[in-house]
Image 1 (cartoon, rainbow, N blue to C red):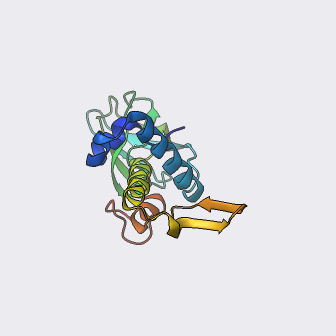
Image 2 (image 1 turned 45 degrees about the vertical axis):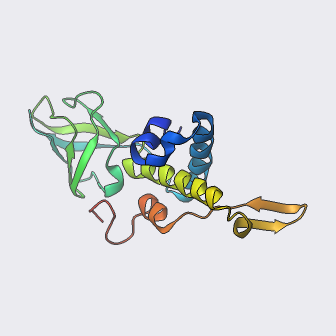
Length: 176
């Protein structure tokens, strides 16, 4: 599953519009592999104690264990419109949805799945960093190994990309 697409790159990286789509896709795929090797696995989770209110975006759950990395993930359940995503995390027990619920209910079974927005940004930023290194021509500093014995190009993840994938302390997204 790709965490970032060409349209994502075009929306969040201005220079990407000047790249050939094939090259941009290859950069995004390489960046995805780097990010996926560092990021916590994306596992869907379901909890059965959610509370929704008709025409409100607020969803609460004592067992939701929400975090900033839920922003952008899909939320589904009875009374939650198809395609709804987490748009805000207020605390570990409450989130705001991208669209209001269509029912007032308690003990709703809700699932959170899909790719968080922070993962999408991380892939775009990693692709941008690799592209920028290519433009600067600083390829000699990222070679691991010698000659025919496993010479591999490595592009380490920047602090920003690492923070997007594994938020520490005060998050770039505003919620720890």
